[in-house]
Length: 484
Ligand SMILES: Cc1cc2nc3c(=O)[nH]c(=O)nc-3n(C[C@H](O)[C@H](O)[C@H](O)COP(=O)(O)OP(=O)(O)OC[C@H]3O[C@@H](n4cnc5c(N)ncnc54)[C@H](O)[C@@H]3O)c2cc1C
Image (cartoon, rainbow, N blue to C red; front, side):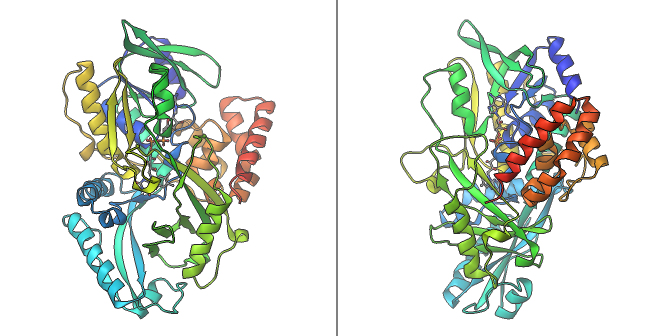
């Protein structure tokens, strides 16, 4: 991907078949879908690709065991089908992971053993490994740091795991390779209308302040939790459709969960599931479900959320993690669609597509696992509305190669230069939060690496010394917010 080449296409006044606002999982898959059908496609992202919710997930490609408990087998089956496609199309980035549900009675063994057999069946023969009831000794061998106390055994099942930001960048690169133009650090600031119909968008290049007008036959609003804000560019008085909920994670040293098996606690005190998952040689512990009134770009875990996660982990692990053990903490906002006045966790995880009278197509809801299907649905609808020639979706069988392997540690200089050259990384945060994941894995180490990374980017992009200083300062402030 090359930012100057994308800007040159804008300057040339190209008219786009499909313009997508938002470069998270939904928008990026929509760009890949539209570009691979041969539609002239432009994607604009306000910050960096996946800088919103899509880099702050639990990193699971899954059907969602808990939706079975909610009696939604159709939803689980559809997501498990997408899991199968992702394991096949992006094998460098999505891999199977074993989970164990610890059990403390014969009834629990039966209940979770049966539930997870149903989960296997819904995968229709594509389960990476069949679920199995384990003895107490087998459970402790797989998770040696599980408190043995009242434990009677466990149920093992398998699911998919991935690196969310790495998959996002890979999907962006695949959209680019298929002929799409993508631009990060370029918000849509206004919509252009003639005769009451949307005909294009105004965008700003955040690096230069320059604005562009981009004509488009249809615009897709894939701005996640910001979808209502974006809809107001079209309909200033539009009523809110989203009820965002915050989910927090903390990252701990690997010694808290040394094996290769993740732990799934099926019922926390507030009725959620809790995961402790090996991730890039650390342990990812999450998540929470906290209703929030304000939608901010940089959500921060609340103190109660950190306490909740650490407190629950202490009930199951032999050594109780404390705040001093937390290497990084992060939060994301779920773009849940309102279905009435129910609490956040009961809101729809399904996706919803809406079309305004002026023709703005808005897609909300869903999850990372189902982003490909969401994109298929929204591009079908957009193509139909725009009168584009009908062409079948190709993404179910389209490989998504990894342009590079995400690094967990502090990246070396060669990595930083390649991230800038090949994946449109433009800032210290782009490199340390999403091309490498070190901000999420060890916020102190990330802060320490900032000056060196700023120097490499400055050299690659011919930035002045003042830019480097400002980058280091703002990244260090961000890294501090990742430490509870
Ligand atoms: C805590 C948590 C854990 C989760 N875990 C999982 C999981 O394990 N597995 C799973 O499948 N799903 C998971 N999800 C759900 C999944 O992460 C989200 O459904 C998905 O990332 C949403 O992607 P999105 O593209 O819709 O939104 P986002 O990723 O938020 O992308 C929207 C983008 O729009 C951009 N934008 C906003 N306004 C403008 C504008 N004016 N112009 C241009 N761009 C704009 C934003 O900068 C943002 O990058 C989780 C969610 C949360 C919160």
